[in-house]
Image: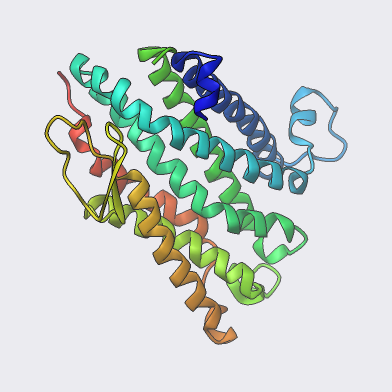
Length: 167
Length: 123
């Protein structure tokens, strides 16, 4: 990656990574929220098709692979940025006494890691979506992953607001 | 509870059993590795140094990071657990509830919040 630094500054490089991480997270958030809505509150037949009905009437299985891929890439980028965060973001936050913000961010790292480990089973459940025996597991695992994703997004957003871009 | 609505791994393929046990074991092992300080390695981002196992931060070399090491430790353990689960007889595999996949993260949440108690302070 060093050749890139011949063309862009170090700050720009890390800002691009952070922006990429954020954009992938937004895409992931959209995908898993649609899927969770579809599985948690499926569209009823005969209901007037408004915004909410359209929002939750997606085909859940079609989202499973995208959710896994987006989660993995966002996680890898986040893990890469994390080393930089540890020195250039967390230490200044400690000096400023933003303890709860840091705690919320640490919790985000823990939850997204646990979510990562559950992705193979999540994918398996959705690839066998016709299997009625696992309907409850599929539904609740999707909802849990969606909640983790929302929490991670908000916690990351708060940390970014505290420290901002440019590291 | 009939077979159609049963919430067990009775109809899971070996790959499905592996995925379920891997996910559950990974979550549990990750929390254990975090709370018991059991990283496979320690990364020092200031210098790029990697030490095996748990290593404290060195003076004038910046902080030490254990997160990568926790992930590595729990991945190895979960791979082993998942692999062993596929060797179980079908009758035993059928008794592994698939609900563990979403229940375990919920159960572990208060443990994780407690493990971060250092940060929940008003000052």
